[in-house]
Length: 88
Image (tube, rainbow, N blue to C red; front, side):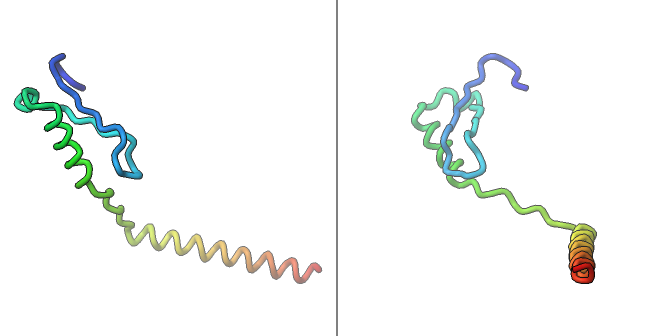
């Protein structure tokens, strides 16, 4: 939520990121008196220095549950293959 109507917004619509379509910068009261080209250069510098978000770490429980589900799937596939080989 933005309070006030005197906020200046700068939009970078095509950043060099596969994750974002556009970036919005809200210019402070001190920066609103600066040159528009200077603001654009500063915004592009910030956008270009941004990195991709860090990967989320999985807990040991999540890894164990995933492994258990994979083992159950392999077991069910083996049981199905054995049942089909007996029938045919």
